[in-house]
Length: 327
Image 1: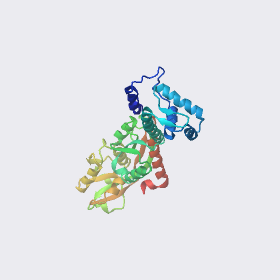
Image 2: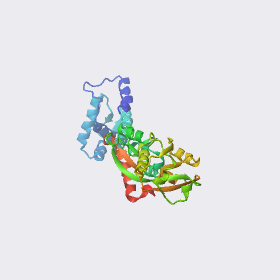
Image 3: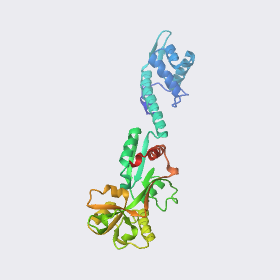
Protein backbone atom coordinates (compact mmCIF):
# COMPACT_ATOMS: atom_id res chain seq x y z
CA UNK A 1 0.00 0.00 0.00
CA UNK A 2 2.97 2.34 0.47
CA UNK A 3 4.47 1.70 -2.98
CA UNK A 4 2.64 4.60 -4.66
CA UNK A 5 4.64 7.02 -2.51
CA UNK A 6 7.99 5.77 -3.78
CA UNK A 7 8.19 8.23 -6.66
CA UNK A 8 7.27 11.11 -4.36
CA UNK A 9 10.06 10.20 -1.95
CA UNK A 10 12.54 9.87 -4.86
CA UNK A 11 11.61 13.37 -5.99
CA UNK A 12 12.02 14.62 -2.45
CA UNK A 13 15.59 13.35 -2.14
CA UNK A 14 16.60 14.18 -5.73
CA UNK A 15 15.86 17.83 -4.98
CA UNK A 16 18.37 17.63 -2.15
CA UNK A 17 15.78 18.52 0.44
CA UNK A 18 16.29 16.68 3.71
CA UNK A 19 13.19 15.73 5.66
CA UNK A 20 12.31 17.58 8.81
CA UNK A 21 13.28 16.04 12.11
CA UNK A 22 9.75 15.07 12.86
CA UNK A 23 9.22 13.45 9.43
CA UNK A 24 6.68 10.60 9.71
CA UNK A 25 6.31 8.21 6.74
CA UNK A 26 2.93 7.00 8.01
CA UNK A 27 0.90 9.83 6.56
CA UNK A 28 -2.66 10.20 7.72
CA UNK A 29 -5.32 9.36 5.09
CA UNK A 30 -7.21 12.40 6.31
CA UNK A 31 -4.20 14.56 5.45
CA UNK A 32 -3.97 13.05 1.99
CA UNK A 33 -7.68 13.51 1.27
CA UNK A 34 -7.49 17.13 2.40
CA UNK A 35 -4.40 17.81 0.29
CA UNK A 36 -6.07 16.12 -2.72
CA UNK A 37 -9.12 18.37 -2.42
CA UNK A 38 -7.05 21.58 -2.30
CA UNK A 39 -4.75 20.45 -5.13
CA UNK A 40 -7.70 19.57 -7.36
CA UNK A 41 -9.74 22.68 -6.56
CA UNK A 42 -6.67 25.01 -6.39
CA UNK A 43 -8.62 26.85 -3.72
CA UNK A 44 -8.71 26.37 0.03
CA UNK A 45 -12.23 27.84 0.28
CA UNK A 46 -13.71 25.58 -2.41
CA UNK A 47 -11.89 22.56 -0.95
CA UNK A 48 -13.23 23.37 2.52
CA UNK A 49 -16.79 23.52 1.16
CA UNK A 50 -16.25 20.23 -0.70
CA UNK A 51 -14.99 18.53 2.46
CA UNK A 52 -17.50 20.33 4.68
CA UNK A 53 -14.86 21.48 7.15
CA UNK A 54 -13.61 24.87 8.31
CA UNK A 55 -10.99 26.49 6.09
CA UNK A 56 -8.49 27.16 8.93
CA UNK A 57 -8.57 23.47 9.87
CA UNK A 58 -7.91 22.54 6.25
CA UNK A 59 -4.95 24.92 6.05
CA UNK A 60 -3.46 23.42 9.22
CA UNK A 61 -3.78 19.86 7.86
CA UNK A 62 -1.97 20.73 4.61
CA UNK A 63 0.76 22.54 6.54
CA UNK A 64 1.22 19.50 8.82
CA UNK A 65 1.63 17.27 5.77
CA UNK A 66 4.24 19.61 4.25
CA UNK A 67 6.13 19.68 7.53
CA UNK A 68 6.10 15.87 7.73
CA UNK A 69 7.45 15.51 4.20
CA UNK A 70 9.83 18.45 4.42
CA UNK A 71 8.56 19.60 1.00
CA UNK A 72 6.33 22.49 -0.02
CA UNK A 73 3.37 21.00 -1.87
CA UNK A 74 1.37 24.13 -2.64
CA UNK A 75 2.38 27.70 -3.42
CA UNK A 76 -0.29 30.08 -2.20
CA UNK A 77 -0.96 33.75 -1.82
CA UNK A 78 -4.12 35.66 -1.08
CA UNK A 79 -5.60 35.07 -4.53
CA UNK A 80 -4.09 31.93 -6.02
CA UNK A 81 -2.99 28.41 -5.15
CA UNK A 82 -0.47 26.63 -7.37
CA UNK A 83 0.72 23.06 -7.07
CA UNK A 84 4.49 22.48 -6.88
CA UNK A 85 6.33 19.71 -8.76
CA UNK A 86 6.50 17.70 -5.53
CA UNK A 87 2.82 18.34 -4.92
CA UNK A 88 1.96 17.19 -8.43
CA UNK A 89 3.69 13.85 -7.81
CA UNK A 90 1.93 13.42 -4.48
CA UNK A 91 -1.44 14.27 -6.03
CA UNK A 92 -1.04 11.57 -8.69
CA UNK A 93 0.12 8.95 -6.19
CA UNK A 94 -2.56 9.91 -3.68
CA UNK A 95 -5.23 9.34 -6.32
CA UNK A 96 -3.85 5.88 -7.05
CA UNK A 97 -3.56 5.03 -3.37
CA UNK A 98 -7.09 6.13 -2.46
CA UNK A 99 -8.52 4.36 -5.49
CA UNK A 100 -6.72 1.16 -4.46
CA UNK A 101 -7.88 1.60 -0.88
CA UNK A 102 -11.51 2.01 -1.93
CA UNK A 103 -11.31 -1.12 -4.07
CA UNK A 104 -9.74 -2.99 -1.14
CA UNK A 105 -12.59 -1.92 1.12
CA UNK A 106 -15.11 -3.09 -1.48
CA UNK A 107 -13.37 -6.45 -1.79
CA UNK A 108 -13.20 -6.89 1.99
CA UNK A 109 -16.92 -6.23 2.24
CA UNK A 110 -17.71 -8.57 -0.66
CA UNK A 111 -15.58 -11.31 0.90
CA UNK A 112 -17.28 -10.85 4.27
CA UNK A 113 -20.70 -11.19 2.64
CA UNK A 114 -19.71 -14.17 0.46
CA UNK A 115 -19.78 -12.12 -2.75
CA UNK A 116 -16.10 -12.68 -3.51
CA UNK A 117 -13.63 -15.44 -2.77
CA UNK A 118 -13.16 -19.11 -3.59
CA UNK A 119 -15.47 -22.10 -3.23
CA UNK A 120 -13.80 -25.52 -3.18
CA UNK A 121 -16.52 -28.11 -3.71
CA UNK A 122 -16.10 -31.87 -3.46
CA UNK A 123 -18.69 -34.17 -5.01
CA UNK A 124 -19.48 -37.67 -6.22
CA UNK A 125 -20.48 -38.09 -9.85
CA UNK A 126 -23.81 -39.65 -10.94
CA UNK A 127 -25.91 -38.71 -7.86
CA UNK A 128 -25.17 -35.01 -8.46
CA UNK A 129 -25.49 -34.92 -12.25
CA UNK A 130 -29.21 -34.14 -12.13
CA UNK A 131 -28.64 -30.76 -10.46
CA UNK A 132 -24.97 -29.78 -10.09
CA UNK A 133 -24.56 -28.10 -13.48
CA UNK A 134 -27.77 -26.07 -13.06
CA UNK A 135 -26.86 -25.19 -9.49
CA UNK A 136 -23.38 -23.91 -10.40
CA UNK A 137 -24.78 -21.88 -13.30
CA UNK A 138 -27.22 -20.15 -10.96
CA UNK A 139 -24.55 -19.59 -8.31
CA UNK A 140 -22.21 -17.99 -10.87
CA UNK A 141 -25.03 -15.76 -12.07
CA UNK A 142 -25.66 -14.52 -8.54
CA UNK A 143 -22.03 -14.37 -7.42
CA UNK A 144 -19.82 -13.79 -10.49
CA UNK A 145 -16.78 -12.79 -8.41
CA UNK A 146 -16.55 -16.19 -6.68
CA UNK A 147 -14.10 -18.71 -8.15
CA UNK A 148 -15.40 -22.30 -8.04
CA UNK A 149 -13.00 -25.26 -7.85
CA UNK A 150 -14.46 -28.77 -8.25
CA UNK A 151 -13.01 -32.02 -6.91
CA UNK A 152 -14.66 -35.34 -7.79
CA UNK A 153 -13.60 -37.89 -5.17
CA UNK A 154 -14.85 -40.96 -3.32
CA UNK A 155 -17.26 -40.29 -0.42
CA UNK A 156 -14.58 -41.04 2.17
CA UNK A 157 -12.06 -38.77 0.48
CA UNK A 158 -14.58 -35.92 0.15
CA UNK A 159 -15.36 -36.06 3.87
CA UNK A 160 -11.70 -36.25 4.82
CA UNK A 161 -10.81 -33.22 2.69
CA UNK A 162 -13.72 -31.20 4.09
CA UNK A 163 -12.65 -32.05 7.66
CA UNK A 164 -9.08 -30.89 6.93
CA UNK A 165 -10.21 -27.64 5.30
CA UNK A 166 -9.03 -28.70 1.84
CA UNK A 167 -12.64 -28.45 0.63
CA UNK A 168 -15.32 -26.03 1.81
CA UNK A 169 -18.27 -28.33 1.12
CA UNK A 170 -18.97 -31.86 0.00
CA UNK A 171 -21.89 -33.44 -1.87
CA UNK A 172 -21.43 -37.07 -1.02
CA UNK A 173 -22.67 -40.26 0.62
CA UNK A 174 -22.65 -40.55 4.42
CA UNK A 175 -19.54 -42.23 5.84
CA UNK A 176 -19.04 -43.99 9.15
CA UNK A 177 -16.33 -41.52 10.21
CA UNK A 178 -18.50 -38.45 9.51
CA UNK A 179 -19.27 -37.76 13.17
CA UNK A 180 -15.71 -38.49 14.30
CA UNK A 181 -14.44 -36.00 11.72
CA UNK A 182 -16.64 -33.32 13.28
CA UNK A 183 -18.66 -32.69 10.13
CA UNK A 184 -22.09 -31.13 9.93
CA UNK A 185 -24.39 -32.72 7.34
CA UNK A 186 -27.73 -32.13 5.69
CA UNK A 187 -29.70 -34.81 3.88
CA UNK A 188 -30.35 -33.85 0.26
CA UNK A 189 -32.04 -37.02 -1.04
CA UNK A 190 -32.73 -40.65 -0.24
CA UNK A 191 -32.10 -42.57 -3.48
CA UNK A 192 -33.99 -45.86 -3.93
CA UNK A 193 -31.89 -48.81 -5.09
CA UNK A 194 -32.73 -50.36 -8.44
CA UNK A 195 -31.72 -53.46 -10.37
CA UNK A 196 -30.10 -53.20 -13.81
CA UNK A 197 -30.67 -56.21 -16.09
CA UNK A 198 -29.99 -57.17 -19.71
CA UNK A 199 -33.19 -56.79 -21.74
CA UNK A 200 -33.37 -60.51 -22.45
CA UNK A 201 -33.01 -61.46 -18.76
CA UNK A 202 -35.87 -63.65 -17.39
CA UNK A 203 -36.61 -61.09 -14.65
CA UNK A 204 -36.68 -58.11 -17.02
CA UNK A 205 -40.38 -58.55 -17.73
CA UNK A 206 -41.42 -57.77 -14.17
CA UNK A 207 -42.40 -54.27 -13.05
CA UNK A 208 -40.39 -54.58 -9.82
CA UNK A 209 -38.12 -57.13 -8.17
CA UNK A 210 -37.98 -58.41 -4.64
CA UNK A 211 -34.54 -58.69 -3.09
CA UNK A 212 -35.10 -62.40 -2.52
CA UNK A 213 -35.37 -62.94 -6.29
CA UNK A 214 -31.67 -62.06 -6.62
CA UNK A 215 -30.47 -65.02 -4.60
CA UNK A 216 -29.60 -67.17 -7.64
CA UNK A 217 -27.86 -64.42 -9.59
CA UNK A 218 -24.38 -62.90 -9.33
CA UNK A 219 -24.58 -59.24 -8.34
CA UNK A 220 -22.51 -56.42 -9.80
CA UNK A 221 -22.01 -53.45 -7.49
CA UNK A 222 -19.59 -50.61 -6.90
CA UNK A 223 -16.53 -51.60 -4.88
CA UNK A 224 -16.62 -50.89 -1.17
CA UNK A 225 -13.43 -48.85 -1.49
CA UNK A 226 -15.22 -46.39 -3.78
CA UNK A 227 -18.48 -46.21 -1.83
CA UNK A 228 -18.71 -47.80 1.61
CA UNK A 229 -22.26 -46.66 2.44
CA UNK A 230 -23.71 -47.76 -0.93
CA UNK A 231 -21.90 -51.11 -0.87
CA UNK A 232 -22.93 -51.83 2.71
CA UNK A 233 -26.54 -50.77 2.08
CA UNK A 234 -26.80 -53.34 -0.71
CA UNK A 235 -25.28 -56.14 1.35
CA UNK A 236 -27.52 -55.19 4.28
CA UNK A 237 -30.62 -55.40 2.07
CA UNK A 238 -29.59 -58.86 0.91
CA UNK A 239 -29.04 -60.06 4.48
CA UNK A 240 -32.42 -58.63 5.50
CA UNK A 241 -33.96 -60.68 2.69
CA UNK A 242 -32.34 -63.81 4.13
CA UNK A 243 -29.42 -64.51 1.83
CA UNK A 244 -25.76 -63.76 1.35
CA UNK A 245 -25.24 -62.48 -2.20
CA UNK A 246 -22.87 -63.91 -4.76
CA UNK A 247 -20.73 -61.02 -5.98
CA UNK A 248 -19.78 -61.21 -9.63
CA UNK A 249 -17.71 -58.03 -10.06
CA UNK A 250 -17.12 -54.95 -7.89
CA UNK A 251 -15.63 -52.31 -10.20
CA UNK A 252 -14.44 -48.91 -9.02
CA UNK A 253 -16.52 -46.91 -11.55
CA UNK A 254 -20.32 -47.03 -11.55
CA UNK A 255 -20.53 -47.01 -15.37
CA UNK A 256 -18.46 -50.20 -15.39
CA UNK A 257 -21.22 -51.83 -13.32
CA UNK A 258 -23.57 -51.17 -16.25
CA UNK A 259 -21.01 -52.43 -18.76
CA UNK A 260 -20.70 -55.74 -16.89
CA UNK A 261 -24.51 -56.07 -16.86
CA UNK A 262 -24.69 -55.44 -20.61
CA UNK A 263 -22.10 -58.18 -21.06
CA UNK A 264 -24.36 -60.62 -19.17
CA UNK A 265 -22.10 -60.96 -16.12
CA UNK A 266 -24.93 -60.51 -13.59
CA UNK A 267 -27.51 -58.12 -12.18
CA UNK A 268 -26.33 -54.64 -11.25
CA UNK A 269 -27.51 -52.91 -8.09
CA UNK A 270 -27.46 -49.13 -8.49
CA UNK A 271 -29.07 -45.97 -7.10
CA UNK A 272 -31.91 -44.59 -9.21
CA UNK A 273 -29.76 -41.60 -10.23
CA UNK A 274 -27.59 -44.05 -12.20
CA UNK A 275 -30.67 -45.76 -13.64
CA UNK A 276 -31.90 -42.37 -14.87
CA UNK A 277 -28.64 -41.87 -16.76
CA UNK A 278 -28.54 -45.36 -18.31
CA UNK A 279 -31.53 -45.39 -20.66
CA UNK A 280 -29.32 -45.16 -23.74
CA UNK A 281 -27.95 -48.63 -22.94
CA UNK A 282 -29.41 -52.01 -23.89
CA UNK A 283 -30.65 -52.52 -20.34
CA UNK A 284 -33.80 -52.64 -18.25
CA UNK A 285 -34.07 -50.97 -14.85
CA UNK A 286 -36.45 -52.15 -12.15
CA UNK A 287 -37.12 -50.87 -8.61
CA UNK A 288 -36.28 -53.22 -5.76
CA UNK A 289 -38.74 -53.94 -2.94
CA UNK A 290 -38.85 -53.51 -0.06
CA UNK A 291 -37.26 -50.17 -0.81
CA UNK A 292 -33.71 -49.58 0.36
CA UNK A 293 -31.90 -46.31 0.01
CA UNK A 294 -28.52 -44.69 -0.62
CA UNK A 295 -28.47 -41.22 0.92
CA UNK A 296 -26.93 -38.12 -0.64
CA UNK A 297 -25.79 -35.51 1.87
CA UNK A 298 -24.07 -32.14 1.98
CA UNK A 299 -21.26 -31.92 4.54
CA UNK A 300 -19.19 -29.05 5.89
CA UNK A 301 -16.85 -28.34 8.80
CA UNK A 302 -17.87 -25.49 11.08
CA UNK A 303 -14.21 -24.83 11.98
CA UNK A 304 -13.36 -24.19 8.31
CA UNK A 305 -16.57 -22.43 7.28
CA UNK A 306 -16.45 -19.31 5.09
CA UNK A 307 -19.00 -16.70 3.96
CA UNK A 308 -18.81 -18.11 0.42
CA UNK A 309 -19.64 -21.59 1.73
CA UNK A 310 -22.59 -20.15 3.62
CA UNK A 311 -24.11 -18.44 0.58
CA UNK A 312 -23.67 -21.64 -1.47
CA UNK A 313 -25.45 -23.66 1.21
CA UNK A 314 -28.21 -21.04 1.29
CA UNK A 315 -28.74 -21.56 -2.45
CA UNK A 316 -28.98 -25.34 -1.99
CA UNK A 317 -31.44 -24.91 0.90
CA UNK A 318 -33.49 -22.55 -1.27
CA UNK A 319 -33.60 -25.09 -4.10
CA UNK A 320 -34.57 -27.84 -1.65
CA UNK A 321 -37.48 -25.74 -0.33
CA UNK A 322 -38.72 -24.83 -3.81
CA UNK A 323 -38.17 -28.26 -5.36
CA UNK A 324 -35.69 -26.99 -7.98
CA UNK A 325 -32.88 -29.31 -6.87
CA UNK A 326 -34.53 -32.38 -8.39
CA UNK A 327 -36.59 -30.93 -11.23
